[in-house]
Amino acid sequence: MTTSAAIEARDYRIGTPRAIAYVLAVAALLLLAIPALAFAADIFGIEDALREAITANLAAADENVREINGSMLPNSFQAIMGNSSANTPAAKVLSVIATTVMNGFALPTGSAILTLATLVQLIRVAERADGSATLPGIRDVIKIFVFLAVFVFLLQNSWGIVKAIFDDSTVAWTSMAVNTPTLRDTAFELPKDAGLGELLVYFITSYLVKFCVSIAYILTFVVCFARNIQVYFYAMFSPVPIAFLAADETRQIGIGFLKGYFGLVLAYAATALILTLFPYLFNIMVALPGISPAIAAVPGCLLMLYLLYTSGNWTQGLLGG
Image (cartoon, rainbow, N blue to C red; front, top):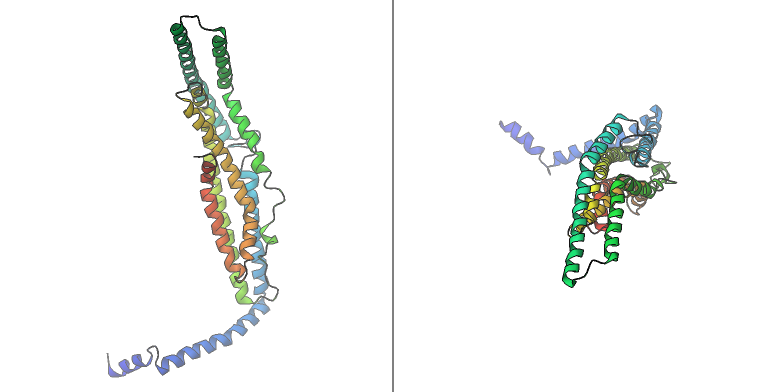
């Protein structure tokens, strides 16, 4: 490096008079440019375009939230994998598979388990009779026949029982999507005297809100699709765990099945609750004192994604899982 180049490089080091003068000159040019940019934005309508874009982004986020509550969460057992009449190809294929598996495997297996449980009950009655050197009581025999009749009914109607539990539970989430506020009704309001810089911050935030809600849309779709398949899985194999309820030694298997199925159904309600409360949560976050609404909106959206991701664990805790 030549002597003149070394002197010039040294003069531009941080803290030297020439470097300080250079920074001050750039800052002055930027300060002079800001009014010019604001004037240009006013002339070309950039501020109005930003306001319209912010409103459109929030409207798109609202539409996604309402579509999740309105179409992704099934309003009946028959609507899983299809519409209310279950005429879609996915619903038909899944229904055929479920019927085939239930009639070909689950019901015969459940009947065999029930037969074995009934035989065990008869053996126990006979052992008690041998021990006391008396004939089995009529009451004991009648109890076994009633026991057998009840469980035969449960096995033959296991699909209908699972379906009825799901249909009755849909009220828990279909009633939540009524009269919920929109994101545009919250405290996320643009100041009337907002300048170009503030509008740009709100514009970027509105895109982040739209992006987070879009991620929530995709996440809810994947989770609900997986839960729909799980519901059919529980339904098609339901005769087997129901039959396990007949024996004292295997009763916990049947109880675990019921807990798992109720937890799966209630997970839909947890998802609907999060999406219903999201506008309120969003409103609380953007209304925090001392924090710009544009800054507080992003943590509110991230919190919604976290709650959606962990919603399946809520029901496990509720049912003691």
